[in-house]
Amino acid sequence: MAVGTFVATLLYWLGGALLLVAAYFCAWLQYHHDVFVYKTKCKDKKWAKPDDYSTIIANLQPIATKKLYFIRHGESTWNVTFNRDKVTFIFRLIYSCVYDAYLTLTQSDSWFIDSPLCATGVEQADSARQYIKAKHTTSDHAKFLHDGRAILVCSNLRRCLSTAIVALYDRLKRSEEKLVILPWLQEITNNPDSVSITPAFTLPRPSWFDRNAPIMKPFDMNKSYATMLDPTENFGNKPVKGNGKQRIDAFNEVPALYCIRLILWLFSDAVDTDTVVLCGHSLWFMSYFKEFLPLDSNHPSKKKKMKNGAIVYLQVSLYETQQGKVRLDLSGLFPQTIHIIATQ
Image: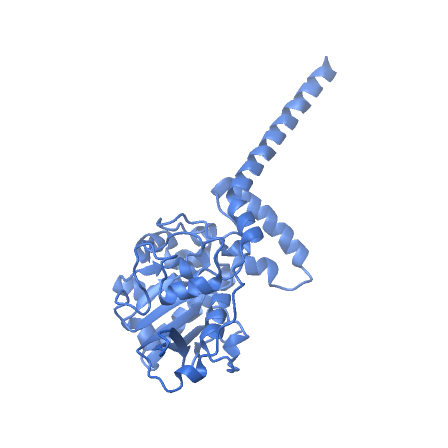
């Protein structure tokens, strides 16, 4: 009798454990479906090299010029796992995977997918905020970032949204401007951290880190996400069969493939100012520089990533050739680094 009771109890607990594992697997599979699709089918980094337009536009005058401020997001939890020292990598990976499982089951969130800022990343974003606050009376660039007339845009990934809120917090709180979420700025890679978990045209939800980390309390991320973001242009994740070049072109001109309401963007009447402040990603920025700096340019921005939390200023000009082709080009004086965190 005792043996039968023991066996029944054991089967009961084993059955419960199996059901829990099955429930987790179903939740994990549903939540990670997009990750598998992007990882196996997305060719985000593959497109033809740019043509050499330097001789064609050498004697032309630009028909329009825009000023851009690029702000790279702070370090993320993905970076904590994969971009630190190799000695402790296996321990960080195990911890991250276990914590990711916990987040998936309890909060429908993730350590890896659409990875949020980590504590170091918040410090990097806040360094940009402190630069603007301290230098806005002595630096033209800091003054412009403090209160200059511009459109503020951001990638749809949460590490960028949180970085932009922190870096521009004083301005956003004072002016009541909103950060326009543009999915064209989504990072150029097929890694899980580049997959957005926010449904199209919905207001993003701050990550588990944004909501709970003590370092985030001064920025009240629940309120900031609700009041400082504009999701009306966020049509969702990047197309699986697209590539980064198409999104760069979409940011510049918005071809019909990406244009939900058939509007133009950077060089159009939709952007009624000559300056855009943009919070985005290192590979997207590097690709932009490679695409529009002259092919023979040895500018370091074509080979080296912007540092986390750094700010770069550039001017991009639009030319129309005799063949009717439109070409963008960056001035030889730019990009110009405005702010790099002193500790990096």
